[in-house]
Length: 481
Image (cartoon, rainbow, N blue to C red):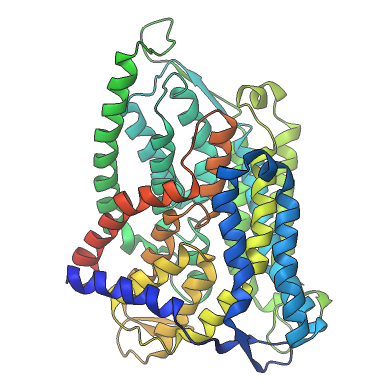
């Protein structure tokens, strides 16, 4: 089975690289199918190349010219797309992406970034292997209930503070991304957007608790690996004479700004409402479409999305108005991390549209029916594309296969093992790259701001290849055979 799985992963990459130059694409404004040439994916690949390489060879230039690079690659997609399909279709495609995907995405990140930045943890608890495992465990378990972004923003600063005395600490943030920013979000639709998409398609809210055995297994393996790596580097730091600055014996921890948990609950409630309200009759018109503000063509900013945005922005505003600025100063709070994520991901969202359209066109014809195939295909693509539409593509594909046994969704019958594989692939493998999930990049940006030399784009992928891929192979053998 292991050889079969490895062979499948290799063939998947070959298939993606050598696929035909044109395939069926997503719907146009007139609901007709169009042929999306594969070369339109070049701007997306070019932007990813810049994100990976320019910080290494032209770091200062990259920091000051990110908006220009993003705008350049975006135009290299938009202009040829407009020539091929018309200016109206190009404008509608970009607006659909910005209004219905990017806007709610960045507002959610902004709200969580603001609220979590107003909570601080102080005390004499020093970062040791045992303490770090406790922190990672808490963060991982929180992720399913306040979202991977919420848990990441809430826990990353305490982790950085407690390990500030250490020289070797970038690995701590790497495992933080693996566990808190990704794997921990698999138990509820609140945890990660793909599961919220499944919930809106008829998957029961608490069905994701079926993923608990897989999550606990991955946690156990990754925390064990982390302990041995961290202990070795901890001993190395101690041997060099580094010691935590603890003036008194004992453990004293003080949390300040805890009233912001109310605003965190507001944001979580807004996310849940965004998945529930579109199905309510009040928000649907006579055609069954979700009501909203008409922007252009078929692009509509829905009222449920507006409600979500308003609640999140209100929570962020109240958080700032009711929190002592001293707390943000203690957290070394700046706008740099959210600014960098906002700039880079607007380019990623725009330029990845051809890749998503190609994936939608190819989904039904890939011949993927086995759980392990669903796990790896969904996961590998979620490592570089937005995991929410990737999840939806393969959930739709599974629902259309014609299974007669499993869980009934609005897309068709899906076997529990297949749905488990799709869900785990989309949530877990977002950890494979910095761009696989938005919290990954935010954690990296905050760590960089605090003087932690995080691995480069390719070195991080090296970590995932050495640590995560073997764990995912074990998942395949144990859970998805």
